[in-house]
Length: 152
Image: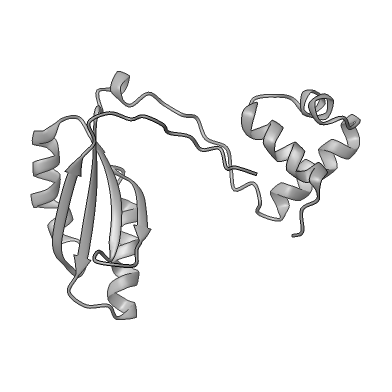
């Protein structure tokens, strides 16, 4: 779906104010309610807007440890890759998973309560995901920036 500047203004306003009503977004972008609502609906139907999320504070939920793990697979056939990707989607501790170029095949971010919980997760889960040959883990010291807003 080609986006014009009005669509981009709507998306920027909507990202910045996800709880805003259509009328508020319309005011922010200089449209009347109905045309703004139509464009917002069209953006959702086209899949530009994939969904809405509630951002939670992991530390306040006692999930204060973020681990970035680089995984290498033993083999790279379609069946193994599909099985690995499906398995990562099933684990709530894995909050992000990226297929990578370079030394690692995948980069995942795991959120857990503490280092001991990560050790258990590593031994009992990560090392047993389909095709995993090795895992190299790095612990985040602090989060400097985290956003879901895209630079549109």
